Amino acid sequence: MAKHVSNIATVRTSGRVGRNSNVELLRIIAMFCIVLNHFPWPWQQLYSETAFVSHLFIRIITPTASLLGGLGDCLFFFISVWYLCEEKPDLKKSLRRAWILERELLFWSFTMFGVTLVVLRMHLINLPKKDFLLFTMKSVFPTITNHWWYPTSYILFLAMLPFLLVGLRKLGRLWHLRLVIVLLILFAIVPFQITRNIFRSYNMTYCVWLFVYQFSIISYFKWYQAELLRSHRFARRCLWSGIALGFIPQILYIAVAVLLHSDSSG
Image (cartoon, rainbow, N blue to C red; front, side, top):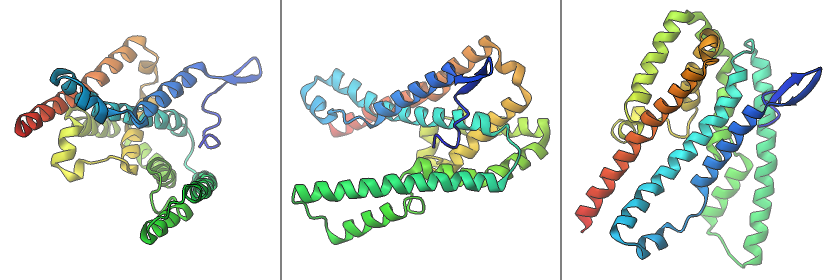
């Protein structure tokens, strides 16, 4: 995806193009969060070898790591969309970006498919016919089978981008602000972990609507609140508000769920 947003992490200084250290730092943080989420931690072994208090702590930490993975995904998208929302609506350009990303997906999908076949053959592992056909289908058509949710959702977002740019611009500042307020109330102030489990229509996990939600909010501040975004005080308030609204309610919800499960199983 780097080709589509290659200008994102660069700044022009003295006639030369250099790296934007702030953007690079965000990328490093995003990668670190995603690695924490996907790293194969030996949780089951830790469960069996720790006392109840430590056991409870680990069970709370485990799903919390997945929240960090979501944070990393959102940071990567934030970096991309911060610059995309400055562009003029251009469907042809967006579809060209989507096609470039599709070709990259096909390259890595075929490569991983071939490596997997070699590894299976080396270890004399035979997949069931149904599993093998499904794996082959996902490798040949990674986007339409949603083989990897992030690039699939990003391709769909690129196809929608010109229309989102036109529509949000036509809303104007006041109605765009009202839209942002409604979105924040529905999907930020109310803990997402709770609403996702109760209301299916609230679930934006692993789909393009998460990107549309973020774009609607980011574009408002980018277009109409540029001066506010330069304020360090505002940045600190956003950081601590995000932690308070995004992590604390989720962790409390997870802790209560773990305690209830421990009581029922005990």
